[in-house]
Length: 231
Length: 125
Image (cartoon, rainbow over all chains, first blue to last red; front, side, top):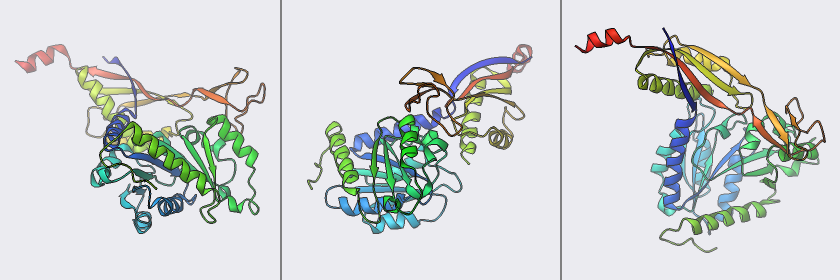
């Protein structure tokens, strides 16, 4: 005879608990963190390079780079001046809290202000796996097309900031901005959006100002010894 | 494929509840999965056969209950099924929606075979 036992548990509950541990570790260290997600080629690494270069004197940045294989991205982040750690997922299409934990232990969190996690290039699932980071950021790019919010609603719902990269290509590429905005607005009303171009630098100022403000605000809520360097 | 880690979590949850219930075997898993949760049933089934091997849940049947996406228009309060290329409210054309259902990823319940009382008693003596 079989019996039915009620479970009623979220299948990703174990990951969520580990993510909460990661969050505590970052809170205690006073490190504000971003989970950067995008499809392959949208410009995650380029945006990180630009951000590192611009913030070099005001914010100390660590980078965790998730990728299926290779350390190409971490090498680029390190070359741009960050303490960078590569996490190879060996085929998994996303980072999860389990992969982040050992990387956090290897970083010198006490001497960082900001941690940027570069997730695996994928629009399907990364937003479903909490890492423990403070804000999820999605980078969309003009050549991908304007239908992506409609096609990947989970990703567009699970973010707190949106970057639209490669706006320098708008005159050359068909991109229905109204349709894109409509999808974003439906899924994530009022989400803070940064249209920019990593190539030309247009629009970067607003993005950088947002990060600096977020880091400062976070540090006020999570103070620690060694004040944030003033720009 | 993220279904591998999802399926490993699924196994861990099922085995833990089976142990707590004193079961000797897990026979069934009843899953509730929303259409917006980015999960492919066939992939879960594929990985399930691999990860459950050699455990008390080997051979257990997976039952998938699919939940379609339902949203409410925050302008006119009409309920509708978003998707198919449009996220606009079919009533007023409003563009702000709140998802009511469709992003679940739950293990609702499991079927177990309890350890027979008589035998459990005999074994403990």
